[in-house]
Every structure is written in structure tokens, then in C-alpha cells.
Image (cartoon, one colour):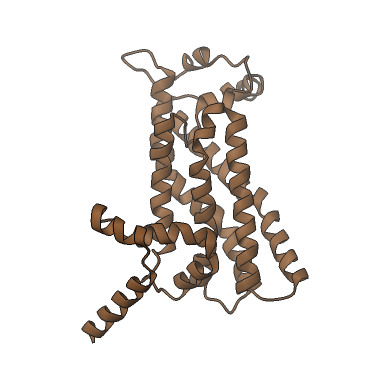
Length: 272
């Protein structure tokens, strides 16, 4: 039984292998499915999603595995170009030149041997946010999974997850590819994020059309429904990030984020 299964798996891999696949295995000992999966997210998204639904990983990597790898690789890519993946005090105050960060740091209620620096605060925020990004990502994806389940209840939740991840991974690949644009500031970051979002909804439309059935009008309504969820997912991420930063500042340094962002309002709230 095992020998027959190995032969079938070997045949499947051999049929799908390209010269690049064979070269990668022979020279670099790299799983050939990596290149095929990354390519076919854009060329054959329905095939990749269907393979994930059926748990057939003979030709493609698991969408969950790819997502975890991309999630980790974004930190590497960001470090190479010196751009933050997580929110920073500098990025949140960049639009307001009147913000006095140095004065704000002196209000810390936790005593340190050396004067508190912005770099120390940023390092702590980055460390904590790198851990909380995972639950925030999962939480912000829930509206899409619920919508997909409502669109076609007959598909198990596992199947909807594979479909969602197939779209997300394609968008994620594009977003990471445009990380160098972040070196141009907020405008470069906005361009990269916009292109990644366009990719997300384009491929979402492709998978909706092939795997959820219905007329063209039904497809349009479903796609509009997913687009309408974007502000909700962004709000979840923003609120979660805000509370994370505020918690770290309060517990690690005795600082108040509101005292930096809106000092007048904070002063009024703090006054007896």
C-alpha cells in the first residue's frame, strides 16, 4: 500500500516538474513545490485553491504553510530595506511636526538608570507587536471567512479557509515585492498596499466565479460584499494595534499614547 502511494506521489511530482524544479532540487535541495506554488497563485489560482481544499499537496504547498512562510519573510524583507512592518511612534507622528517626542519621553512614570530614549521604546513596541500581529491577522480575517461561508454554506469552513488563503497569499507576495517602495515614505507604502489590495480582490473575483457559482450579478454582489468588509478589517487591525501600543507604553514605561497624540485632550481628561 505504501509503495503504491509513493509511486503515485512520485509520478504526480514528475509530471508537474519543470526544468527549474529539477534544477532547484539537484543544486539547492529546494522543494520544487515552492516555485510552482508561487507561480500558480497567479496563473492557476483555482487549481491551487482546489488542491488545498482536497488536501492534495503532491504539487503544491499547503496554503497555511505558505502564509506562515510569507508572514515571516516580510520581516526579513523589511529589515533589508530598513522599513518597519509594525507601527512605530515616528510613523504615527510623522504627519504632525509639532509633536515633541523628547518632552513626552520625560513624562515616563517608570524610573530607569539611563534616560529613556525613543529607540528603547520603539524596540519594545516592535518586539510585542511581532507577537500580536498573528492574533490580529486571524481576527481581521474572520469577517471574510464568515462572508464566504454565507456565500456557499455547503463548502466546509476548511475549504473557505483554503480559498481565502490562496487569495491572501497572492496579495501577500505582491505586497512583499513592493516593500522597497516603503523607502520613499508614506506615498510608496500607499502605492504598494493599493496594488496588493487590487490583486486581492481581482483574484477573489476569479475564485468566486469558479468555486461559488451563480450569475454575473451574483458574482458582482459577492465581490462588492467582500470589498465592503475592508473598512471593518482595517478597523480591527487599527484598534488592536492602538490598544497594543497603549498597553506596552503604560506597562513598560508609564507613558500615555494619548498624551503624545492629543496632549490638550489628555490634559483635560487628567485634570481633577
